[in-house]
Structures are given as structure tokens and as C-alpha cells.
Image (tube, rainbow, N blue to C red; front, side, top):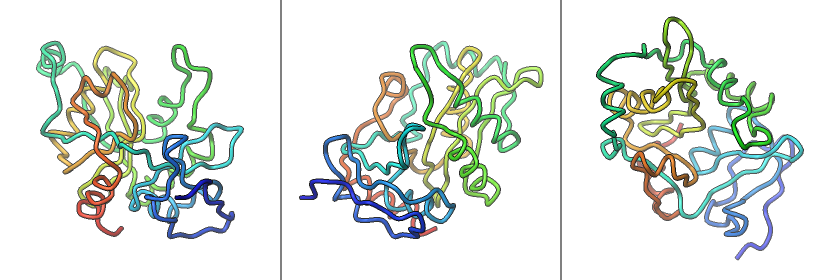
Length: 220
């Protein structure tokens, strides 16, 4: 078993080491370093990895075990959320304000000291968006962006990155649109949270997740 993460050079171009070699502690860390080039990021996601780090750290690549996922047909819609959807309070737009969605997701939140979405991440994912791989689903109210989410789509799989809400249920409405209108076969939620669990996520083993990535996302 691997007892330390792999170290990648700045000109690393993939493929990554096997995600099964990720450390169980802390939480599936596989590799350190590398870069955020579009091809590197796509390679990472297609192998079941994602980058997550603070601005005082090098790039860290993770493959948690177990992995949090959402099957779109298992999304839990509460009575209050259903009312919000039926009232059509929000206008849903797709890919019209990707950078704004990322910036809103990066904004400080209650009880959090900082954000993992630094400027390098912002620029890298905006490039992925320009290349057609990263997407935003946005909730607008009177031409004001009030909620949304963004992530990477490879094949029929959506790798969710972050979501935000400035008005009641706005991010949940965006998620409902993703599940029931765009309809990917599987949504990667990465790590467990009580909020996402209330919406129907489940935990699956890393091996099963990687098998699903290969089957659903295929090769980019």
C-alpha cells in the first residue's frame, strides 16, 4: 500500500497514478503538484480525481473512499422546493455567466474562513468552459444572478464542483434542472455533506465509482 502521495512536476501531462493508490488518510489524497491545464484536469476527472487545495498549498489531487454521488432520478424534492419550482420564481439559464457563477461560489460563506476557488482555479475552469467541458446552470431573478452551480461534463457524467444560493432554494432549483432537464446518468458530488444528503446523495466505494466513470464518462 502506498504510504505517501505521488509528487508531480509542473509539466506533468498524465496519466495520473491509479486512484486506487490514494491514501485513506487524509481522505483519499493521491498526488501533489502538477498543473491546472485543461488536458490535465480532464485526465484527472476521467480517472476519478479532482483538485482541491487552499491558496497556501500546492495543487492536491483527491479520490475519496467512499465517494458521494447523486443519481438524478433519486433527487429528493421537498414540498417547499416543489412549491418554489411550480411558482417559477427563477429563470433558468445555462452557460450565460459561467465566470460569475464561479465567483459567487468562491465568495466567503458563513462560518468559513476562506475559499478553495483561487484565481488559478477560476482561470483554469473558465478555460475548460471556453473549450466546452465546464458548464454553469444559473438561477436568475429580475436579471440578477441569485443562485446556480457549475461542474465538468464528460460523456453522460456531470462532475459537480460547487453551488451557491442568494435567494431561497435557488441552488436547489438549479440542481433540479440539471437532474430532470439535462439528465446526466450520474452526478459526482465528491464528498458527503448533510445538505447534499438531504437531496438524495449516496456513498459508494471508490472502485465502484471508478468503474462508473469509465462506463458513463468514457474517454474525453
